[in-house]
Amino acid sequence: MTTYDGFDTLPIAGQWRVGRDGRTADDVNPYSGDVLTTLPLADAADVDAAFTAASIAQRDWESTLPTERADVFHRAARIMEERKDEIVDWLVAEVGAIRPRAEWEWLAVRAVVLESASYPTRSAGRILPAALIDGKENRVYRRPLGVVTVISPWNFPMQLSARSVAPALALGNAVVLKPASDTPVTGGLLLARILEDAGLPAGLLSVVVGKSSEIGDAVTSHPLTRLVSFTGSTPVGSGIAASAPLTRMSLELGGNGPLVVLEDADVEAAVNAAVFGSFFHQGQVCMATNRVIAVDAVHDEVVDRLTERVRSLRTGDPADPDTQIGPIINDAQVESILDRISRAESDGAEVRVRGERSGPAGRVLGPHLVLGTNGVATAAEEVFGPVATVIRADGEDDAVRIANDTEYGLSSAVFSRDVGRAVRVATRLEAGMTHVNDTTINDEPNTAFGAEKNSGIGRFGGEWAIDEFTTDHWISVQHTPRQYAI
Image (cartoon, rainbow, N blue to C red):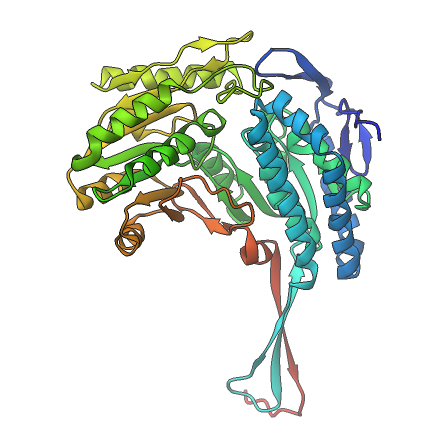
């Protein structure tokens, strides 16, 4: 079996070809700065061609037997198993993921693909009795939406593409996918090749890579799209929602994850979870532990233990098996992280641990531990980097107040040896999910979850995926003649 090649063209409207924009973009290894591939970019005409072909191909795909659709995803899972090392190598090279993190993403994508294989036979309608009319029944048929737009980010590109692309296709839809420009291969092209080899009919999945200023509106506002599934920042998500107000949206946006440590917590377990939650994949996770909120009784112990652990973390080449923290995705992201740290210091925060900037491309940023209030920049804003801010709380109620004092509501965590108490506190937190005695990061790939406040709308995973990517068609049947009164 030879490795995949041809990642210098785009699968658009059933054909791998160059984009028509006339410009190219280099796909760069964030650690070394080496060019992995150069892609000719798509333009608005390419986007329109993708949607047109998708709309045509979807009609036949919807009527394909559920078992035939399921077979595509079973084959895709087998291809992923055969090509595991190749996929993991791409995630290390293009995303800057350390190998254990890359292997987790491979596992998560495979799990989503296998779960999606079950969706064609799990999508069911229902029959409802008529409430007022004799001899009448109401049938609710479950149907695919049509064409779905998926826009995915660069931090977990393959997983955050697959979790929408795979269920949408399995349920009978077609998809136009726009991956992040930093990760076009793992975010789209690699998935497209796997599904193509698994037997997905041509035209059902197009991948358009281009500048957002050129094709962004064409992708989100195309008249043929029936739903936009977007994962990314809150400002961009808000702009998408405003640009297409009558289109269904599934938006997972920013986060500012609080991890609350109560006085009866297992402090060592809480610190282990905080280190993982704050520094996994360099903190480039929407569900990262941005804030560690420790009540006064254990605050100093939490800080001391965290300081020791954070100072011991090893930075470097993500391909090195000893590396725990690899590169930030690009220079602009590095600068934004450093800016938040600088502003936090200006606001009176103490940087207890300060990591250095290193690596061939200067994008490896060592871990930072900040002590401050909930108002300093590293606590009030989503950092999306290897930074944890510890905040002192005056008891349980104050910890809940601090945790909820944010515009975000994606993920959270509570630590207490009293599980009943922890669950009661968890119910008071304004978040789409809360983990008791665990990290804020959801590492169960098929878990269904959503978000509160400015962290998004819609739900992802599980039965919710079926709801998101299908629609109800109400059909009433009158079995006996009826007298109409006018």
